[in-house]
Amino acid sequence: MKTALMFSGQGSQYLGMGKELYEKYESFRDVFRLAEEITDYPLTEIMFNDETKLSQTIYTQVCLFTMYHAIMAILKEKGIESQYSLGLSLGEYGAYLHNGVFDFETGLKIVKERGFLMEKSTHKISGKMSAIIGLSEENIFGLIKKVPGYITIANYNTNDQFVVSGEEKSILTFNELALSNGAKRAILLNANGAFHSEMMKDAEKKFEIFLKNYNLQKPQKNLFINITGNLYQRDMNIKDALVKQISNSVKFTQMIEKAIDEGIDAFIEIGPKKTLCSFVKKINREVLVLNIEDENSLNQTLAKLEENYG
Image 1: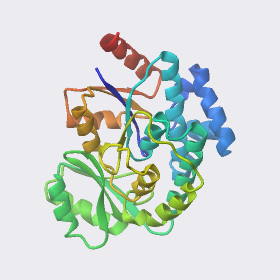
Image 2: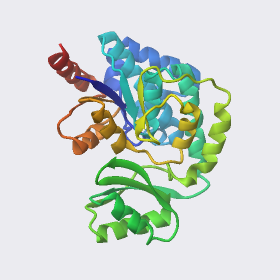
Image 3: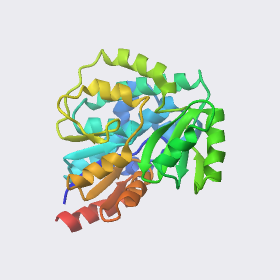
Image 4: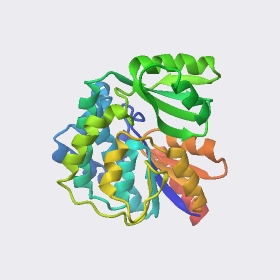
């Protein structure tokens, strides 16, 4: 069997995430202690006790990225490794870390700035995101043309689930139109901006300038890229991929389909909830999907890996 690690995206966070692992594993606590020193954010206080701050992009992204690394520290202790990784939006930074594109301290500083710039952009223009379930890509694009204002597809989650992003009024109008044209559901997301759209261009430009201060490495393993839906190619500029991801669509469906083509038959979601696991199951029911977010899911995943890999 071939496994791939996949990292949860923003929006999966919840109050108390990671608490069990924090209490049990010294390696998990060590990662958070270091992250709090680097960022000067009270991360565990936010994650365990402050739902308001946890939902703010400036804190959410740092908390999630730190959780990725802390879970990988436990996996390292357990001798679990993978040669493939991918992530949804912010989750791609977990995949970059797994691939040695940057070390944890560098990645944390980059994620902190990314969250700050994206949060700042949301204050300038009122944007929203919505998950549309039960329509095809062709249907979505057809309906977008009928709505005044700016809307685009932000995420390709499955073959019949997409996230649209754009101006708030346009998104609200689009939801009504989608439901009246056969969509099963149209769900406004708990996102405070129109991420992965042209409305993030200001943040993208400033992020590009910020990244000039850093030297990034080429991926050491096999990394799937959000903006292409394919494996990283050696002639690709890795900084360009990080920058463009802010305002471009996340091609999650395409990454999973490509991963399966590469022979991957087990996916392990790293981070809160099992959202990506549910997406993968809808894309292909034959592959094994596992997740790690707490003590129970960790033990279940280790048992399944032992059963399948020995």
